[in-house]
Length: 175
Image 1 (cartoon, rainbow, N blue to C red):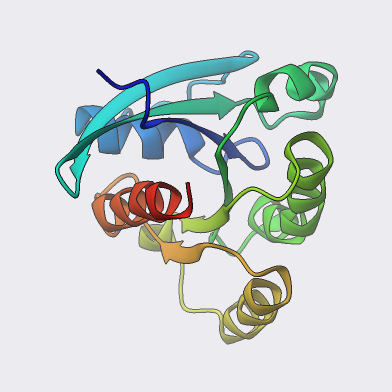
Image 2 (cartoon, rainbow, N blue to C red; image 1 turned 30 degrees about the vertical axis):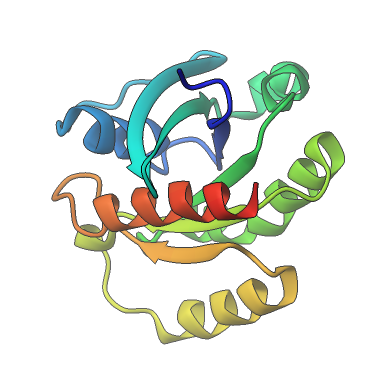
């Protein structure tokens, strides 16, 4: 039933940015307060109608810690799109995750070729608007021709449904 419209979408980004929480919020409408470290990768399915066609998205939640670098290549295989997630929290981890966007973009191109790539800025509920980051991200989005840029909170659900639906539809229309 889903053979024609089945899309593997990899979620990548540094550890602790909320990839697992975003996927859980969208697919299960839930949020786990305690951090759950992803070991290797986790998989989730989501079915959606797009233009009277059934579309199955398979979300691959790939561990962001450096310890898992050796296994990433196999999880990227056959991906139809990628989502780079970074944290908006104004701390060392948040800033590092922002700086890593270009590295993650390079990894996608290296392992997948020119597939659609979106960026999600997560944890908006824990941040104050950082004008420098907004200017920087706009430049990166324009330079790298990303599929889209979305601001979300996995905790509150803000922007999550819109981001995921837009990404799924974007991948559908580019396939």
